[in-house]
Length: 305
Ligand code: NAP
Image (tube, rainbow, N blue to C red; front, top):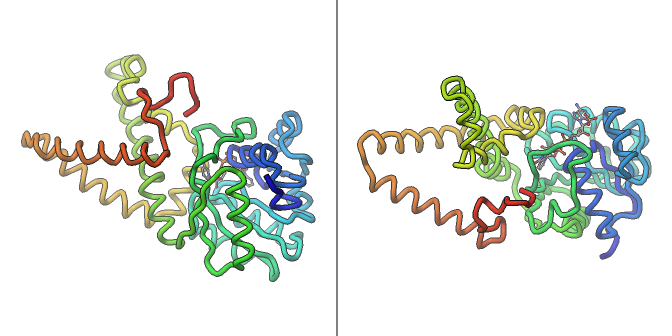
């Protein structure tokens, strides 16, 4: 596979950055990859496991001479990081971020991008409940979607960013920023909140039913616990920065929940059956689109989620 950028700088060395690094190495996508993480512990780990060709003790040094700079920190940290690196960006370079929310990142990062540097917001729709420099793997983005929110960015720079994500294994699609934040509230953000809530409810119940919640968790609860194990910093930032879309979808969710609650109370089996039939068809559509496996146990026996 062809090299897309000469030098790539990864700022933040967690799940997404480390997966990008291994995918870049797999495909020969970059000439050299430099990296920076906030804590000495993460930088040490990165050096030990060979994550990045060179790891620097400051973000400013890491971005020096980079053709592509990738911001891989929690959404709430994007602005301060962009401000710190801005004077050190190479003219003509491209900055992308991988944040799960786009409007707040554009607002926080955009004003710091110097004249002559391109900013192309992106969001890989792939992840696991693990975080940190040792959690990444080269296949994370394979056949997943990476949403690109170009706004009025330079077309050649946007096309190069798309080629880059495709070289990492992803499919790309362009999206308008408001639409992105709403879609992600539906498919990712609110489902996480529901999982966090369900695990919280079960935790309360555990005080009554002792270990039963854990013992019988394969009955469905286990899948909530996997999602609810996701990084607290990342998800706090997601909800704080995608407030409007998350509240909009939560409102709709609550209405549906009340409708189902009423059907249970009134014994409306037809409503429940029709509802569950419809949702089952949506699941089949996801499997047919190659976004999950139809193996039983959610394809997770002995494999990676
Ligand atoms: P992660 O594994 O927790 O890694 C986060 C990295 O950011 C770490 O290197 C951490 O440094 C650094 N960091 C944390 N707070 C910081 C701050 N205040 N200032 C500077 N650096 C800071 O996170 P991730 O899962 O890779 O997520 C990174 C980004 O990708 C987030 O914006 C998230 O929204 C987005 N994203 C995540 C997923 C997912 O499923 N995980 C999917 C798509 C997009 P230390 O290690 O030194 O603390």
